[in-house]
Length: 600
Image (cartoon, rainbow, N blue to C red; front, top):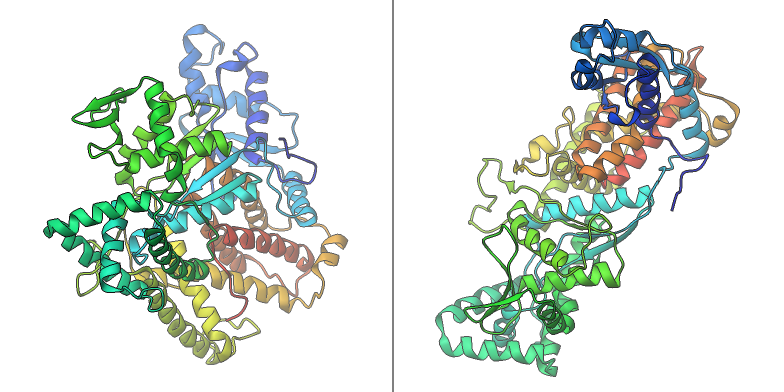
């Protein structure tokens, strides 16, 4: 469904590419029209030009032997001719040839003004060209275990990705594929009934449940009688035995209550479709694969071989049980055929790439997954390491609990806020015109601590490992959520001090007009919003949005040193630019999961 309308934002890159292609063909009309596309790179550190393109170099090398450039002898000369060619569009002000045949592109001032005024009048509306139903599979903790640092990236990345896709207008299905089924529940239920026969009236805490799990695993590995009985409990559970199901539900409910506390603090909204959700159709899935003729017997196990891969999909283990491969194949079929999703995104660590590659190929062999009509993508990410670059552990050697990370981030943020307020009172920092009351410290610290963790994670190249470091996360002068939040507070302070009570009326009565070169530069960067978000969802690179937000905040700081905003002859138009910046920042904060504070 095409949602592009008169009130939506526009892709500046698409407009430039079209205008530049017209200029190239005007300069060289003999070039085949469909033989090239314009490549663009944004420029953020040049006040005069916003984009550059290397396309001339490629065109010249591709066609120089066909004598399509007349007596021009180099890509530099070709670039100079294109730069000198007049355009008929209202997007580009100037094109300039620089070294090695690159072209730099300056946007038209009127175009920038019109686009900013459109944002002020209509808000930030994404120009969706193709609506899809997208399932995002993320977070996925294991029942009976506390969420730990290993769940951080999937949860944060997945939530942000969902928000961006939803803002773009896509239909998003948020899936929490929790580990709530399988052999481990046989041994856990067995041990639970031994240790907590009165569990219905004397429920263990989740921490006790995790200890029970560890004890059950030890007994399962060392006690043959316990192992056999646990395997019988697995059969009973799969047969929906009432006693087993009751114990299983208690374990799941207890875990869910604890997970939801963390999801609430992280402001994550996700729907649980655990492994158990697919259990009723696993036998049907196996039969369907067998009927397709792609299943082989291998040492008692049923497998599907994937061309080019040494390890096969194992859909039935040699003991007759099902595993992750079976469940993920069932999930793939359900999501594509039953839910009718167009794009399936799986967020796990990079170590699971081979597993999902097999599942994707298996779904393709079954005919469920039919590229390019459907897309299945693994959004893998690196590990979170300790500040020393080693595996992140507590002093006692245990895995770091996610709740502990959030608590310490809040505690550190609270200390920083208290120090900041003291400095403001002593006149060492800028005054925002309003200050937090001691009663508001807790809420502000919670927001800042959570934002610091989220942003630090999201700004990383997701494929890479990174070191978890509170000092770096909470640095008010670095590329951190703290810096961004302070930048936003300062912007709000200026808008408050302007004395304007109703900005909606103000926007309706006045128009933004460029009065300074840096204003133009900042406004042009705001117009990149649509293209940045499109790149993020195309390449699954949320760090590009983080780079964009930081870049905007740096440019705001530069602006304060370039010109006055209040008490100036151009105050009205500069306040409008501040309002546009505020709109972009506020929306961007939401997309990366930052809840801003409005005073400090």
